[in-house]
Length: 143
Image (cartoon, rainbow, N blue to C red; front, side, top):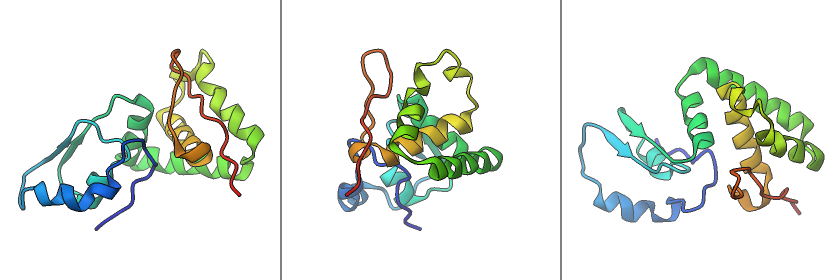
C-alpha cells in the first residue's frame, strides 16, 4: 500500500521516493526513521514493524494518535470541529494556543488535531516556529 503523507513537511522526501527505494534492502525485520517528518518513505513502505522519531513534539503527537484507535477517533472529531469553524479568525485563534500556559496540558489528540489543522490551513503547508518556539506561519489564503 502506498499512502500519502498526512502533513506537508519541509524537507519532505516524496520526490525522492524512487531513488530512496533503490537503496532499500529487499527484506528487513524492522524499519527505523530518526527524522520522520511527513513520513513519505514510511507511508510508501508501510512496514509491519517501525520505529520513528522526530525533534518536533507536535508532529510526534500526530503519529502517536495514529497508533491509538481511541486517540485517533478523538483527533478526527476535533479536526471535524476545526473544519466547521474554519476561517482566518479561527486559524489565528488556534495558532495562538501554544502561547497559553495550559498548552502542555492539552490532550495529545487536541495537539495533534491542531498541528494537522495548522499545517493544512497555513501558508504553503509550512511548519515554522519563532525563537520562543511558537508557531508563527500566517494563514494561507487559497485562490
